[in-house]
Image 1 (tube, rainbow, N blue to C red):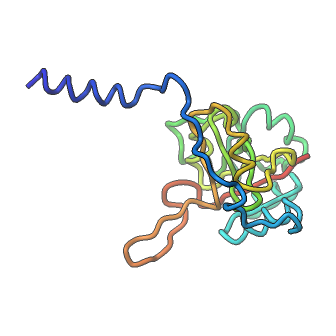
Image 2 (cartoon, rainbow, N blue to C red):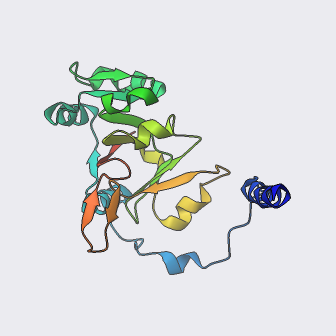
Length: 203
């Protein structure tokens, strides 16, 4: 029995082990996947339209974001230390923001601020990865997740985004707040992740 158990667990370990080299992407015609015409609106306008359609929120001003947090009573949060230095001067004094996400006090944090690896205008999706996201738990556990996006990291379409993935083993596409639906087709937001997904664009 023990020998069979070890045999099964050995196969599991082998399956979970990192590949010696990354598998190549399959060949495909990128033009077949595009839904965003070259003469369409600017990437940011397209992203905002698609992101808002799935109940995401966008801000282009740190002050406006801060005012919304205060108005909504999201007053305590956690922020990537590098981003806090960038945003602090324009955030309201009512906000209590730390730089350590304590997993034993998850319910104390109403929002988390982290950096987005990029965003896809075509689908209205934010892209998060391990290399860029300072704390995955701070991005997924609070009710509000604020992804800070540099304009240079706004990609026009999905094929372009794929070329920027690099070697990061964990990449997440976030298209609005988390959602789930039961067998009756009732859509519920904020069950398996943030109930408010925010994108803050900075230059």
